[in-house]
Length: 637
Image (cartoon, rainbow, N blue to C red; front, side, top):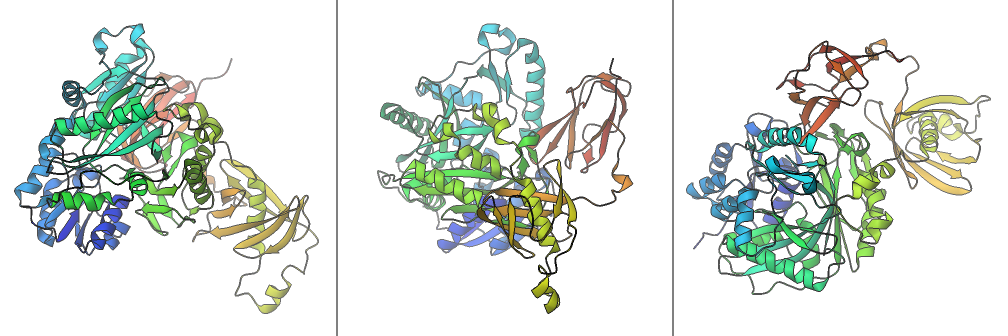
């Protein structure tokens, strides 16, 4: 019989490590964290009883080094290892090594991981088990009738190595790009093709199995709202599924688990077509990011159940009955309007109100670095009905104060309040249709700039008493001027303590300005970062980040026209074939591929013309703002 666990090492970081530690603590287990050098003071390290350093910064040198993780577990006296998700969670060799060293592995048998590790081999197993599948397409013999195609990496997940091909002429380059990304992400360049289902739904089934033959199908989840094939909003149960379809999905998921003698928590993912036909996508042999919605609906702690199953406990023959509806939103440090560009820097404030669950690896004052996924938090609402859960989640996110980094918060709120989402008209093309509208510049930035200017001019709390009492009574005869930029737009504010068209100043303090806007009283919370380079204004009208414009711009801020600067720190993973100084390029042509925070970003030619300089080479590490190349625009006729 498996010994009882007393000390648990989590071979992961961020919010999932913090979440696992929370359950371990409730169960009376000692906890051990591992950390890279950039994570030395991260929240998951602070949340653990002990922590072991993994020297280095890049995942390949730290969290992906199974030998170092096992060494850390032995040194710290841990007797079990939980992999979380990502990193080593679906590495069968690592699972075997954990067991070989006498440690308890909190996950499925290595053989089950191995069987599902390759999507191509997994599909062969599922076909034999009677699970419905999409027929593969041989790229070498594909015809226009096969289009559109979806190229997928055989190993790994998270949307890496995936491409949609709608033109046969683009197939060869798409295969090469998908394979290159798969090699970079998973060390395996195998790519396969299958039909791309337009407006399909991504529906999955959470399963939990013990070593005694019991397999639970814990309802369905809908994860159709995705960016770059990565999930953004998830919910349980998947709305609008006929009972017959729901039951067939449960049966197929259980069959998939039994086919590989599964044990522990896992997820079987399906694509459901617009006419209700389900097809197996893959099985994730680990805990999913979106597991909290299932926990909320079933009233379970899946991590606690993982630990008990690993200790050899038997599950009850049937799971509890689900109640209500749960919705989860992934809050990312990224700019959806700029091709989902990840953001790095100091997170000055992270404050999310309301009766919601928040799983996060950050607190205010923490730094979001370049090496890892840009997810800041998962926010989950549970209510008796779907409409109530969606409303509660949108309200909590809208009222959140998130300062220091651009995030997808406004996109999440807009998505949750979108009529299609409200009507449960869900499919994976949601952002293809609505991204532009959902990322429009928030209104009322001018009013936010006015509030920022009034707060800046307000007397400080420690100012002399006369100034504090009379600050708004000693009215200047001329208005004052301040200039700010927000989302690329400059706002010039001429402000006066009491007189503004359509706006009446009711009070103004350093951190709170109250205005009457068109007869409606509004409160604006104002905060500056520590070096006064940004001002954050939050109100019921929205959140705005304002950058004060200096009166005299620094000449060093100017760059040569046509300069391509690194939009973030990262690694140059590819340079376009044949690209060299003197090459002719066309506007929008991909010139470089930069990898940062587990995502690949294209650097495009800003205009048609001649490449006059190329400073980037494959494998090069670049800093934010580094000059990568220069394109001299060709004269217009």
